[in-house]
Structures are given as structure tokens and as C-alpha cells.
View 1 (cartoon, rainbow, N blue to C red):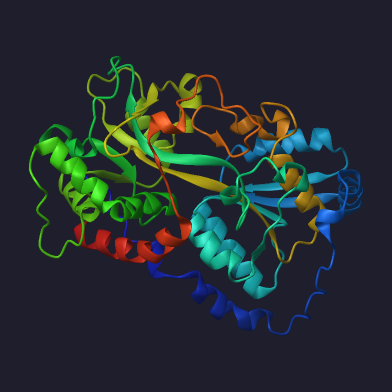
View 2: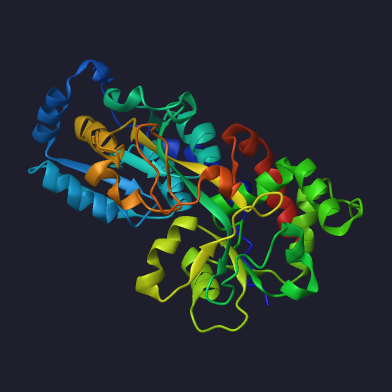
Length: 386
């Protein structure tokens, strides 16, 4: 059984929202340009300005922002954090709409779905970059620009380790298209969630690797169906034809895959870091590391200051806090993300001891611009096979 949701993310570009709403803000007075040299401020000077502002509003794609809020307010008494936990898809649309309308918006955004963030929000001036000078030297260039990222998150294949104590029951993605896994692969509909569309897009971009994995799995060269352009899209078509279960959110994936007491549970694509909730939720989630050609994707969790920030100093102070302190684990600001399955971008922050390394995991790191150029076609293709 498959849940059918026909909302195509790529079919309604943010440019339409910006165009439609521009008139709403046309009569608003232009804001004075911010000429502050933020990089020249000392940390103490930034704190002083932020305390004068007294508040900061953040839109974040993770519920863990509540822990960041509490830690930040403890570190900087007198600065109130107003946090909204919403999906990246909704977050991006809201930021674009509020910017176009000239209405009140967040001061800072913590967001995934880098292909849209970089090519639309950043390109359209909704977000502006800020790399905290304190940590710039410990960040590789790809995590400083075009927006700073404090970690890599994932969408990868997960399984139930209680039911499969000897390791992943899947060693090759193409196995998921076979009768053994019919109706037993769960994922969020890629046309509902941007990070899952990024996953689907990466499968297409890595078509050569997908074709090689097919031949490795079956001993035969892959033959594409008529109208299917590449091996990644063929995999998606075959996966859907094998009754992949499409749902609306990752909690549903996690519960279906991870719930204990199942004799033959499904597998699913979700966030490796969600394994942190195993004890609280009664799950037995584990990551399927080393699956050929890859278990999924790794992508940046990015931080941007809004161009219209009412509290620009506090926004930058919160961005600095999210990057972690000078300790080896990142301290209170990074603690919610210091778990197996989240990969620190700073070279001076150690990986959690129980984490599978990125190399062992084998996840593909996405290229936001390449993904942005391809994902509209992938979204359209998926609508033809659902």
C-alpha cells in the first residue's frame, strides 16, 4: 500500500511566491542598509549589541532547537530566544513570503534543503551569509560558503537491529526492488519533503554508480525501461512498482522500521541521528552502513541571517552559539547535535565515540547546485510512477 501525495515541491518555485507578494510590500519604506562590519566586532562587542536588542527569532528545521534555546538563554541572560520548529519546506516558503511582503520575519534561519536555500533564498537576498570569525579557521571552505554549516545530516537506509542482530538485511539498494521487500520499504514522499527529493535526485546524479551496483547485484547489465533516462530513475521506478510505502513524515518512518517486537519489520530511509531516540521511543533503529552503492545522502545543516533581521547582532550571536564553543565536543550550543549520525563540520570538534564514520557509512555528500539543476525533472518523473 502506498500513500499518494501529489504536492510537487519543484513545481511551484519560490520565485512565484516572491513575485506574487512583491506588490504587498511595494509601499513599505525601504530599510536602511546594514553597513556594520560584523567581522570586525569582538565577541564581547557582539554580545553587548545583542543584549541591547534583547531578543532573537529563529526558524529551525529541527525540534532540537528547543534545547539550543534553553542553553543560549542560560549562557546569555537577558536575550530571549523565540524559536519556531518547522520543516525546511515550510521554513523556506515562509521566509520567502515574509521577505517579499516586507513583514516581520525571523532573524536567523537554521535550515536544510541546501539546493533551494542556496539557489533561491541566498540568490534572492532573503538570507545573507555570516561565518562567525571565532570558528572560521576550523571550517573547510565548503562548509563556510555559500552559507555556514555546523553539521552534516543524513537521509539513509535504516533497519531494525532487534530483528536483524547480525547487521543490515540489505547489502545493495537494488535488493529493495525485489519481491522479498515488496511493500516493506518506507520513506517520506520526495514530493512532500525537500531532503527526500534531494535523496531521489542524488540517485539520478549518481546514475553510473547505480548501474554498476545493479550489475554487481544481478550479474547482468541494466536495461532501462522506455522513457527512463538513467539508472537512478530506473531504481526509483522499480522501487515504487515494488509498493514502496510513502508517508508524510520521518516519525512515521522511524516507528514503522524501528518499533521493537516485530518479526519481519520493513526498512526505510530516514535520519541516522534519529537513532538517538531509540530508548525513549522504544525503537531499535540502526544504520545500514556500507550498502552498495550508497545507503543515501549527507547534506549540510546551514545557518543564515535574514536580510531583514530586526535583531542582527543577536542573530549573529545565535549563529556563533550554534557552531559550538571551543571545547572538543562543541559545548552547550552544539550538544543537541553531538550524536551519532550528525557529523560536525568543524575540524576541531571530535566525532561522537559511538558514531559510524562518514567513510564507513558511505553516504553521498550532495552538491547543492547540481541537485538544484536536476531535482525539478526528478520530481516530475516521480509523479509519473506514483
